[in-house]
Amino acid sequence: MEFNRQNLLRDHTTATETIELDLPIDPLSHVLIAMDAYNVTDEATLAELLAFVNWVDIARKGVTVFHAQSEDLYAMNCRHFGHYPELTGKLATDNEARNLCLIVPLGRRVFDPTECHPATKRGELVLRINTTVPAASADESTINVECVSLPGATPTAYLKTTEYVIGAPAGTGNNFIDLPLGNKIVRVQLRLTTIPTTSSHTYGVDLATVLVDNNESGYVSARAQCLQADHGLVIDHQHGSIAAQGVDQIDNVVWLDFDPVNDGQFLLDTEGHESVQLRLEMGVAEATTALIHELVTAG
Image (cartoon, rainbow, N blue to C red; front, side, top):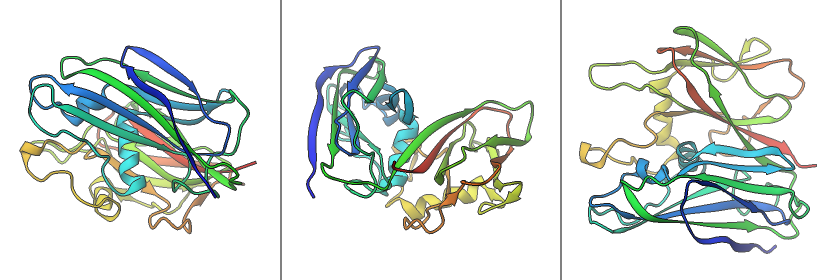
């Protein structure tokens, strides 16, 4: 087995635009998106660097294979690879060069010839990156894009990632969200708008339940603060422990994980069911962002 790693976009000056690139025709393992910039006076925060990319989208003949906002992709990288994406140049120095690279995986593991996006025809698989320029925090930004393909691979499945922006319900209490049917769900990633701050125990989502044909399944009743403990099971270290290090970018993210030990034995198979739902008990009547990771049979 061999792999091809190639640069698709080199030192492209960041602008307010949507970059569109054709992806290779060989089976595709993952895409890498690197953002480079210089500090403006002081150290740019991680959130400020992520703001250069609004969202990333991969579609095959117009059908979504991957879609996520940069903040959600960052959190996905933390869970998927078990460590925080590397951020260089962590110095409060004007014009210090910074680099942050995010990875878009198309399988539960990278470089896996059995689980990656299958081969396509030229122009079928398209990457789009929507960018902007928050020049007050960092400047002289550039974007680099690379991808890794696996010529000769014959995948049996690939990872599909879709974004659900869950609108604010009419009030607190139960909020029901339909999940997609037909594939195996690997995990649901929730980015909460509200998490506890000073003199508050309030979470936007207080408790989560998964319902399969109206029967509780897997996550019968999971509290947000207990779901946060799962970070320590899957990520190698805590980002920071004192105020000067800033709020962790994934403090407001929890996972309903059906692949907790990365071996596929607990995947939620939705095929043949009439309904699969999230029941979110809302502590605040507000919007929530979800990423749904599905394992799709390659055909």
